[in-house]
Length: 174
Image (cartoon, rainbow, N blue to C red; front, side, top):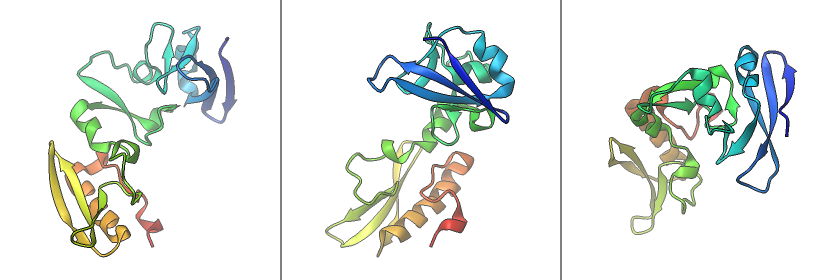
């Protein structure tokens, strides 16, 4: 399949095929300024959630010019198909591990919040955060929402700009 491009404002949408799933096609976003570089690669496809060339070079690494395996290119919003320059940042593997999304949190998470679980013996919600490979207990709370807010506070303190939050916009918290 030949690459298809749609341009709107300063964002390019490219339609690519998936070779690892049966979903068929995916839409990948990138900045208009990167169109000459991206279009120089004749064939793009979706592989394990990433836009890659036929020789398996990832679009995010090409855009940011990252060749060394000492660094990764992080998606600020967690969307691996959003390769717009403002959404990409070059980070160390350690920094990248600080913003693991909810989907990579615990598979059996029933609260819907990162870092929050229900403690049945103590009859309360608890917040726990990982820091440098060690789990730290934040506290026990009467509601999952309060525990999630406490998690976010700790995540900002420990992980700074790399924190993956339950509530990225504080003004939307009830």
